[in-house]
Image 1 (cartoon, rainbow, N blue to C red):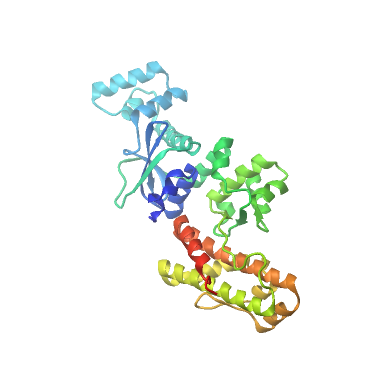
Image 2 (cartoon, helix red, strand yellow):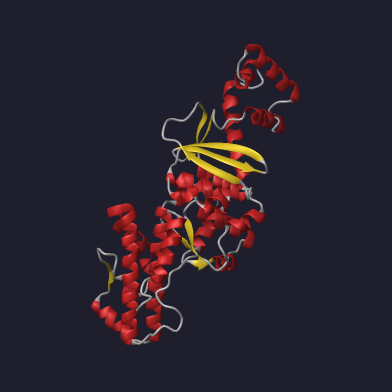
Length: 367
């Protein structure tokens, strides 16, 4: 488990993001939530939601039976009396008094567990603690409830105010990620449509403006895609050069040097954290965007230290054909750096992303 679960961000992000991180990291443990003064516990096993003896609250389940129409007050009173008389559990009493058959009991327990999690997705301002577990779970009643399915169901019904708080700023660029197949999640046609709008990447405001289904439905679909890891916002975008950069031949050489220094810094940072897999991780991220880069970078070679080597002929051409081509190269440099920072966010978490961006701003300051 990374340090994100002990960070300030963990305590304030939308609950759907918390579920997504537990699923993404395949964690086992218990999530304790206090929302509206009421404590709740959700249990997880290898990144799926489970209902076990730690997270099961009998009184909440009996209330759920009543409010969902599965049982009436007279039946529940009979169940309670039977449980006291036999010194058994309420679950056993539900079956022995014929209020629920065994198979129906398991189905209702799963519906109850899903309902408990879904109710929290729309909540904000709750207190949270996550405790990992290394051993086997406690007594399990329902296992392997799919978290991506919960996220989709929750986001599709999330209130508008909670939706606004969960999305990135309107100016952030949102891009499609190729980390997993969309077919694995049971996306709706609306969600698949919005995913298609992200090629090429656009700001959140531009995606909403280009969509034919209206802003509200588009924003809801975007949140689902981001939580599932099918899309990502690049709010923190390190820049190779700022407005007014020197686009002369000598200036471009200096900017290329600064860009490579930043790329080498990112590679060293990732290598320190994950070891030899840093090179294929960064290589894969670059392959995802290579087709939309300036021609000078489409054939560039990623060196073992994280720097880029341009083909000599393309490099010369880029330096002599004018300012617009040079600006295209600068945009590609920024695009590459953003993709590499996104690797850090996806692999190591948002805290590492923020720390890296702050450090990158200092790279080349003395130049």
